[in-house]
Amino acid sequence: MSGIAQKLDGKVAVVTGASRGIGKGIALELGAAGATVYVTGRTAAAGRLPGTVAETAAQVDELGGTGIPVICDHRDDDGVRQLFERVRADHGRLDILVNNVYNSPAAARWLGKPFWEVPPAAWDETFDVGVRSHYAAAYFAAPLLIEAAGLIVAISSPGAERYMHNAVYGVAKTALDRLTADLAHNLADTDVTAVSLWPGIVDTELLQLVPADADGKRLITLPGEATYDLTEAETPRFPGRAVVALAADPHRKARSGKAFRVADLAETYGFTDLDGRIPRAD
Image: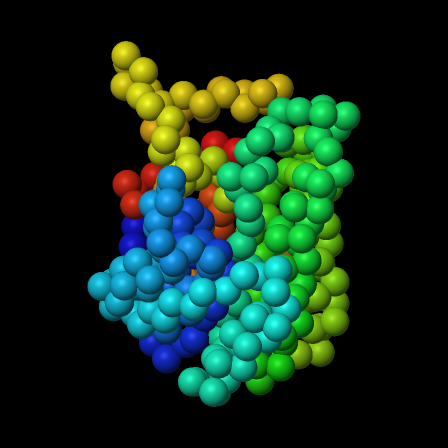
């Protein structure tokens, strides 16, 4: 199946960092499956890159779900606590938490750099938003998720198992997958599932700035890694379909604590990207 057969009517989700990119794609697919989706992020007005939390929430509505935009800086613990207090007050339940928030534009400055050219400040930026914020959201969401036998999904990367981009990136993604494993360990006696998800090369708004060449190819070279044709990349909706499939799977608990490539889940659950492919570039 190319679309989403599963329905998540009545389910409530929080997707962090969903103004654009992978977070937006996940929010839209959850909406298409009928869920109520709290769309969080800092973007109230579009800047160099398009996308705001309000725009994502409106598109969730258009696809059949209910989108709720929430301006939230995930470095602010009090703001995160208030987010989940609002979810409880509004709905009394939380079924799905997608920890996606990440500062991709900032991280892009250090792509392909050896560690002696990546300052300690880059470590702080990456871990503060890309790891600590995931822990904080899980901490505040845990009571709701335990009550609802919910699902926690962390958006991670194959950089957790091999060198990608730079030393800081790889260590952060490894830490994120370790966090998933340890959350699952603590949640073993509950019905909550915690997994990490590894998208491949995703054609986000940031990468859409890459122009086509004379042959119509949009090529991007990651220093020290490879050159990719972005026309073959996955869309942000592809990992969203993986989240929906996991949320609808009554046997998902067996996956808890582990990391999964989106393409592998597509083969297991029978979904594809928007164009009917199962992209595998990572």
